[in-house]
Length: 393
Image (cartoon, rainbow, N blue to C red; front, side):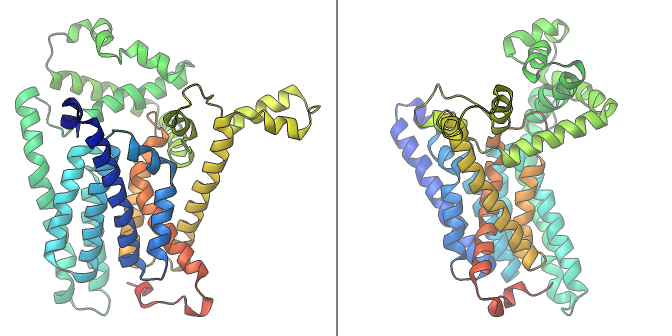
């Protein structure tokens, strides 16, 4: 996509971006239909995902989220098929697609291990049920080993290349940089009563200033610098675990519930929009007193705050429907549990100092799928809610 942009074909790149986003909506509907087999679940899930502000925003912005989500959904679709058919081919394709997605955004690196663990756990549960060991071995340990082996064979060559060129054995340096410039910096900023930005400036986050702060590293290899960043970050985090846990939870809340209204409004042509949270506005209103009529206060609401309220209501409604789907059937089928696992994974790994609403983007397809199943189950007559797809493991 970047190649097209550099060769003056930006329009075609934008069209490709929108096309991938549209295909992602179709994939959400297809996965929901396979996971629930309830009338309307796929359509509802597609609408939830298509109307999500982050989905709209990153269908237009030329960033990696759209391609990553598309590849992730292709992989998830194959995993759902594997759970239902127990055939090896969908599992192999799922591993290949997840590895491809990881090359787009390294955040998917550890998801492969989580999915492999899920397959092994599911196989173990099935083995102790009425099914025979011979019938479940492919979906249990053997399936998990095959999945993680194929994934590893595709990503390890890149790690070997990194080690050969820079002495860094990891898949992506973004891990160490996030630890140093975000997680550890957030902890230090909290302790020293500074903002995160101030702490990052002191650490030399900008490329031009890093060697001014650390002149001794000018002759180091990239691998040595990344090793230093990891060691320093881990030292700070291990010395202040409770502060780190608090900053992590605060970041998790931002990722999970920040509606992203300001970014959305700026995208549609309002670059000067105020970034005001509801809590900040209420605090300011209380400080000004209660003499002004309610109508005049509502007229003075910043545009970003009004849009934030609407987006927040939508986001909370999607969450509630997703949780209802999981609650009604005590988790549901293996496919439903896998979808929930993938969604929770992306939320959990996004907490901490680097938290912004953008990091929620990969989690939203799975949440929309669960919400589609939730609304389909709520609208179905209570006497018909029991479905063979919701049978216990």
